[in-house]
Length: 329
Ligand SMILES: Cc1cc2nc3c(=O)[nH]c(=O)nc-3n(C[C@H](O)[C@H](O)[C@H](O)COP(=O)(O)O)c2cc1C
Picture 1 (cartoon, rainbow, N blue to C red):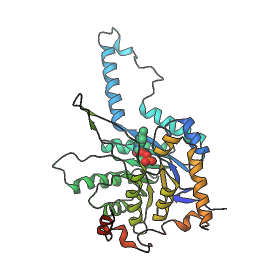
Picture 2: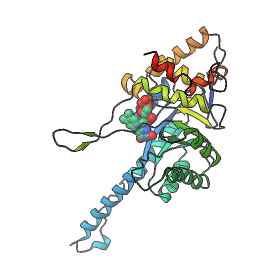
Picture 3: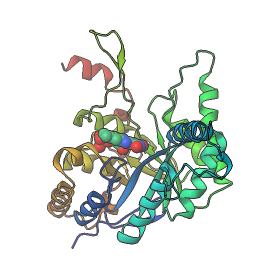
Picture 4: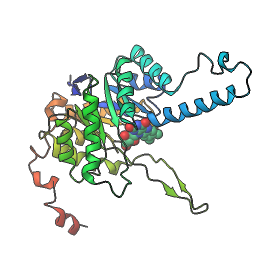
């Protein structure tokens, strides 16, 4: 019997496969299917402060327009008492999952303002989230903002959250930092319990008919996994926080590589959207077959064994074979 357990953000998980933020985890029935198929934890879709703000504005306009011209505006309650806003719905869903699932439930937050990040994080903690993932998703579009200022945003946010909540916090990071490893080290210093590498940035396209930008979302491709595997491999053993890989993990081979490089957890999204939640069961079976075939007794035994610190050829994680790679084409 293979021991597939892993520890992620201080949580004891029965295996390293985690369902990433997606519409699947936002739906109770799909979340149950994910649990039945063996995922060890789920990350909820992000709660977006921007959506809450937008909703509040619309509500204020609605109330305002209702009270105009109404004879007894003060005693008139145009908003139904059972009206549920975005936040209420999110908290309801979180509490429902906590009561109906046995696996840990990680909430995800995308804030705008400092108070928003802190207040909503507290709400998510109070509603029972086992951990909190920060989906910063910040596109540094201001030409006057320096790289150091961008990094400070992340670090200051983490610092103020750490002072206000007491559940594990992980940050879903972009790969676009001048020094990913230094950034992760700084996040660790500010108290991050983990990092999720890497957020996928969705690129707007240009519609050639209308000449307008059109937002689009495309599922990942398997080739995206290598970037994640490389950075996990270079960080493993050099930082003391949990490492999760997200982006391009569609096959058991890529999952095994992420674990060998040193991932504590591998997030799945596109593959489950494509093939359905039950595909997790197939991946888990393939993972355990591979471990048996290679005579591993546990996941922990193989985790990090091909990280840069342990690899036979550590320089290959960097640029040493760059010229050879180009020549090999
Ligand atoms: C339809 C869809 C919705 C998503 N929603 C969120 C979200 O709310 N918050 C978040 O942090 N990531 C979100 N993601 C990103 C995924 O969690 C995941 O990190 C990304 O898709 C890369 O993993 P994959 O290659 O397995 O798809 C979403 C992805 C998709 C495809």
